[in-house]
Image 1 (cartoon, rainbow over the protein chains, first blue to last red):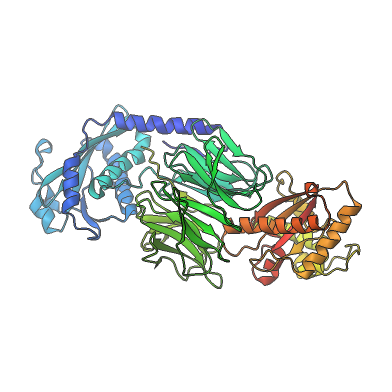
Image 2 (tube, rainbow over the protein chains, first blue to last red):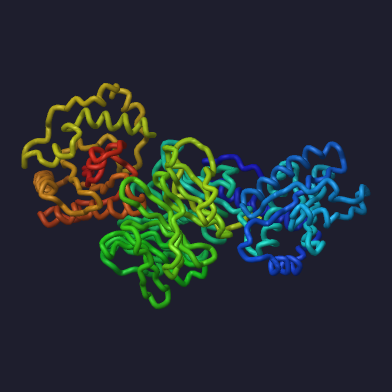
Length: 448
Length: 177
């Protein structure tokens, strides 16, 4: 699964092919399905908003001594992966968690687990059979002593992270009933080469890859919800133009209208909306993936830009200066009716619609040199400030599970990518690479 | 990148009429724009190395054309596309030159300072370029000779912070094609 950094555009097909191969390999190898019914039950009994899940994560067993290093690596991967989500408080299980030393007849001591406060127990075994790693995992609800998940994950020794994250993804989806961040990608802009190019990394900042090599200015990347297309603004023609790249075959469609194009966004996986100015005024248009314009969405003198769609595609948030200064509006895609969303702050831009559909994150440029990120309910309620006293915080983008937000901040000088929980807690840098990084976009798409 | 741009800025400062936006917009109508370079403290850096570190420019865009052509830049107030009287005077001068050089075509680049958010600035930059173009068309320059583009805050003339730098970046810049 290790992907080297390519500058060559033709690597897109190969990259997508590798994803598919990896995904198929992992899926095909699962002999046991998720015990979904128990999972649903578990979610039902868990109190809403009761904080983190206390997870007793046991060290993996390695029946063969030579595999203990594999087990340790996977321990770290799984621990760090689950920790990244912010969903868990992880504790070591008590020493007497297993009341039998017979490997084939292990009985878990649920009383002991319960007494240390663990709500969920996870443990497993790692084996390496002629170059194929097998990770056998079991997850129990400690209160009911009930098996929630029993599943085997296979992969090559160099795919340990993929294997470990596949388990993490299942565990999170089982316990929360929602898609997890595992396998999701973040695309962003960096000027590390001296030009603004588009890059991609995993949700945790690993597996950095350069996606464009235009030696120009590439801006505002957005992946389609199905992960098949990348839309971005491309200056290689000398003008900012919309570029839509099919990631499976590398084919790129440019919308070669006169005027400029700014900040594309996907509506479902079939259409892109972006600002175009070929008719004189800057308006938002809907464009098919083959670059053909399907219709114009806004009709107001002045700047209209930065569309962001509700998950069902029925509503569009966007920025308009129709009232004099940039504010965020919501337009109904069927009726065309427009209502103003933001009233606090004089410069509100960069809306991002939450995957749950109920909130919009955006940035407010305050007087002075501060830009801060806020969330607001789509009905205008619940305005919440997420950043403060930390320079310019911009370009929020929600994680696919809606629990986190990736954004740009210059709090330490140069613009870098940061992540935080959608409440504003646990703000931390995502990755450390040269130059500045900006305009992150978190995909909905899961690699496996 | 920052170093390179600094180099470019230094080079530009050396060859243009001082660094102040005011000097560009208030020069008397019809006069040649050849003025002696003003030596600023920044020019202590060797400008000769700047040309070697110039990145390859995208098509249609010349890093070496900052303020050096016969068409002077037009400057704007913060978050504004309004042409102030100095800007109008500069555009009249530019239109006179275009009248006398009827084969020339110009690309008008709209630029912004780094404040605010970059997507909005891309839109604002285009409106600055368009406003300048519309004014020239009103003065009789054929619309077909004028092209516009926005660089938003992507290509600042001065990468510094503070109103001095910002004022230089809020401009419509002319490139003769």
